[in-house]
Length: 159
Ligand code: SF4
Ligand code: FES
Image (cartoon, rainbow, N blue to C red; front, side, top):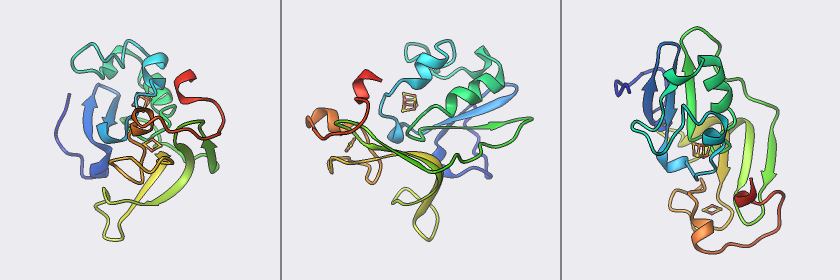
């Protein structure tokens, strides 16, 4: 794990986990334990191991591909020899009993931003729909604790 700050990435990307070909960044406050990472590469993303992210356990491009599956933007990456993540066409995925998953070239008004304009630029985000998150506008998983119910697509816990 490398805790040396990289001035070229925003602070909100969080803690850095570095291997030879890739650095993975993890922001705990944006993680809602959706587990797309754990299902995608269990040898790299394993909550039972320390550190829980070990990017050296797989090919750097494979790690990057799984990071891009994280719907909340809790995970980001910088490839040592490869392009940065490209934004996808903008989509909103309304989850039953849970948040809105956004993908695209996003500019989000957010207190965690170090930007003087108070905005976060991102490619993926989960925005709170229950109104109870402690990290608004982002979802922090509180919808489960409060039993939030609202129609939507695929249920979060079935995903
Ligand atoms: S929100 Fe992202 S980092 Fe957290 S468990 Fe899900 S896929 Fe992994
Ligand atoms: S929708 Fe997840 S905390 Fe509100």
